[in-house]
Length: 84
Image 1 (tube, helix red, strand yellow):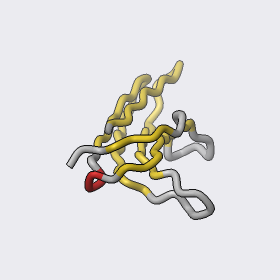
Image 2: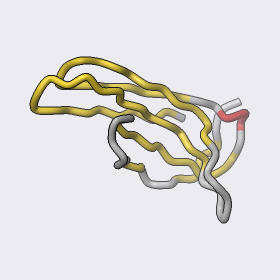
Image 3: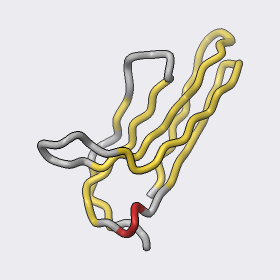
């Protein structure tokens, strides 16, 4: 499975864009499966991450955010049978 994120600003900024794959576990904190970050001074950022999570069958979602901001964006939570 793969998660990707793009970020844009109107002015040049030095920011770090992070993307994560998380496993959706009911009534427990969602563990981090994989993550990647991209730091850049500019107006556009892009980063992706992928994982097989040891072949688990579970519900997963992607999360992306600039590390300098408290806000984030999640994808839909989907059932995935990951690769081995």
